[in-house]
Length: 469
Image 1: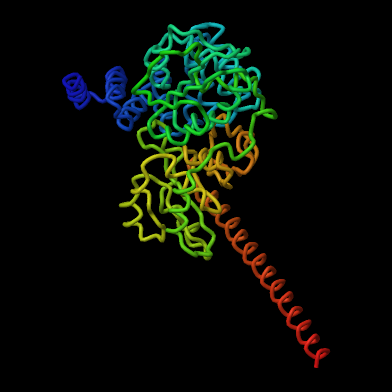
Image 2: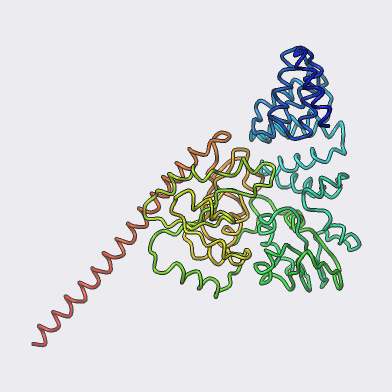
């Protein structure tokens, strides 16, 4: 590939008017993930009159991945003008509309794409997510369940469904009916936050008649899951002995026929180790400040992490709020915190798993977080959460509104426009200042009430002394 790239570059040095070479170079650079230079090549080809399906879709893909969905939408619409019945193009228009938080419009394009190519796995997945984003759980969850029909092993592996599902292929899948004394195995897929969100359903399996519930999950979740089930086992040690029936954790909302207004959201549904909680309480001491946990970034290896993560420097106005003790819940951020000069307590190097994190969160007054597993963990513990939500959102946070059906004590602060976190942080900072002031007022009122009671006691005592004398 490198030799072909070099040959095309040399060719274009002598003839910059060769639009086919610009297009070919752009395609090769795209394969190498050199998107900035590739986009420049595509623009050069376009300026020379190139107007092909490949050009517009290639430009759209780079722009969409680069967080420019409006520009990407324009490219995909031009591609559609060239080939109106192209299923991939219709699906890509839907993806751009979803990124613009226009799920209802996106649904129509995903449906058109699937009418042409019913086996298009990404379009079916995105269609399910779009319905869920609108709050139509009846349609969305049924479509979401069809992820197991996908032909693409690469797509299934990216979702974390493979290879785990293959371990359970020989065991019947639960269909939601009465479990009638059977042993059920529940296995995890997708992310840590997804599994924490699904843990609310685990105790309900006994109500469905399960004799025993076993969960196979990531090691970091074992301790937090164990109080909810009969057995919690690492995914590295899958054993099917004694298992009668199985299901994925992400299938539980469908199997329990959950709707936006019937999601089982009684909190807390997770238990915290009391000894660990007391250990963190001792570390915090007699600090009377408002104790706020903070998570500003997600997993950088995820493709769209740059959309949900907030640079620590942008959080500075929030971190200047007086009367607040900020405590990092961000894994691996010690160096970043140290170099920032910001006043954030960081004990996360001592945290081994989510049970440790949960014990620390249980001592906090509030958690402010971007869309990460910690936001789910705090929500499941019943601790108030202020979620900093990216513009395009995610289906469990819906497309609109300040509240989530999954976590009653979670408030959503949404980006009004792509990439602009400053207004969100400013809004959170104002609300936090008000919370500090309200807390101070309540404390003052409480002290005044106590002083009044003490004064009354002293007055009564003096009166009694006078009568006795």
